[in-house]
Amino acid sequence: MKNLSILGSTGSIGRNTLKIVEMFRGRFEVKALAAANNVELLARQIETFHPEIAVVFDENRALELKNVLPSGADVEILHGEDGYRAAATYDSVEMVVTAMVGAAGLMPTLAAIEAGKNIALANKETLVMAGEIVVKKAAEKGVSIFPIDSEHSAVFQCIAGHRREDMDKILLTASGGPFLNKPANEFVSIKPEEALNHPTWQMGKKISIDSATLMNKGLEVIEAKHLFGVSHDMIKVVIHPQSVIHSMVAYRDGAVVAQLGIPDMKGAIAYAISYPERLPLKQLIPDFVNIGALTFQQPDLTKFPCLALAFKACEIGGTMPAVLNASNEVAVEAFLDKRISFTNIPELIKNTIEKHSSVKNPTLSDILEADKWGRKTVEELIKGQGMDG
Ligand code: MG
Picture 1 (tube, rainbow, N blue to C red):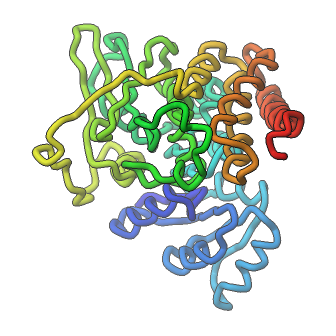
Picture 2 (spheres, rainbow, N blue to C red):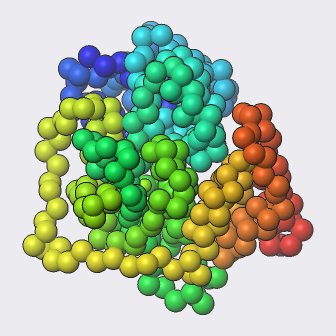
């Protein structure tokens, strides 16, 4: 029996993790659940999985949760950052699934590592912002980080049984998102609804927009750098619209090992929480005959400047990736709120990272400071340029 804490239980990854727990009731027990604010769904999850503690970020929402639960429900309700920390470090928990959205994932993930919990990592922003610190702390504490991001899960599977020094390149595949074939001159009029409509993967809002701008792939490049301890120039991005190959690793003898499957996050989640065992998920295998051809393209960095910006931030390192991430989060939020256009997203990120002088070998407080600075700077740019007027 493995005791889990799931941070971000009402999001897409959280819900899929609970589906797996439900399929394999004898193997996993849910001790803690934490959600941002979806009280209705969290209440149902509590009734199904009986965690010992449940956390909602907002205090008022925590009160609402208490009111929705049947009286006598045997669960401690907590809120805020302290609540998240409690769920991340809960005594009987062996593994923490970190599936919160964005920068909010960093502190709870670090707390879980500090407490010696293994991590099933879906929150890539944690590594983007503070990869060096997180990886070093995990090594210090003897903690394993199992990737849930499908590309990184694929790489993780492709390196098993191979010598690290034989690795030549990591090839991260990208579907290209909903606008792969849209002419660049139509990008300015893209609406949030169109950007949320991903061709192959079902995901949350923030990551869907990141996939449409290719920033998601850029963040994944930085994530891969830290997770697999490689330099940025060992990571290449290949557009692969069918999303059947989830990523590949090339070795110095020219051999390329790929991991394939249908685009469903359950595979990567199950592997992360049950490693090294492969659970009998009864997933379909890709219908290769019907798919017919697997195709590949070079990413278009002019049409998708976010990917180029992420490569640049990855190369600079220090606090730059945290600023990239912060400016992206604010820009995506503003786009979803219809305050700015789709093409404003990379413009704002570019202008923000150009203003930032990166701190080398940053401490955690340097990173949090850079994150705050990045957010403030984008807001000022939006207001200053009258983008939201
Ligand atoms: Mg991914």
